Amino acid sequence: MSKIACVMTSMFEDVEYTQPVDAFAKEGHEVTTIEWEGGKEVTGKQGEATATIDKSINDVKPTDFDALFIPGGFSPDQLRGDEKFVQFAKHFMDEKKPVFAICHGPQLLITAKSLEGRTATGFKSIAVDMEYAGVDYKDQEVVVCQDQLVTSRQPDDIPAFNHEASKLLK
Image (cartoon, one colour):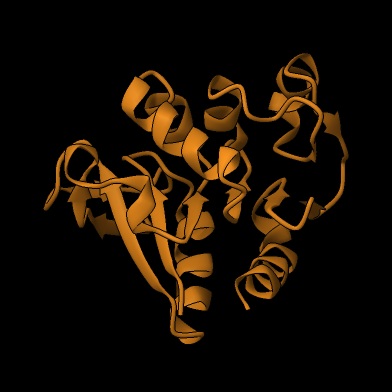
């Protein structure tokens, strides 16, 4: 089964983290949460979910993982201010490893300059940002690009997002 890196910090969108992680776990995949500080507890923006961070970004290499998962909320915007997270995400895109980004998750990929020429979706408030980054933006519940990148817009899209992510991990 796959080893999935999940980059996140506080203010992630609760269900955009919990539901995909539950789906990945049910299929036997291992998800490692990564933030600035391992062992730290982070809280979702709705206050409904918490997660204990497994590893610091300083203690991991992207080569240790098969796939990358970026939950939405305000978390991706915070992470993209740190070049370590930007380069970590860029590795997965450059190496054509599976990348799963929902809602505001593509913000990290925009900063990594990894979306130009790609077809993708994201939350409506970042649609223009994605278009300026050279994305063929689609307002659809899930978009799969080049059998590598799976993106969705919002919590209502999670079932389709999980389904397509699962297909890519097989």
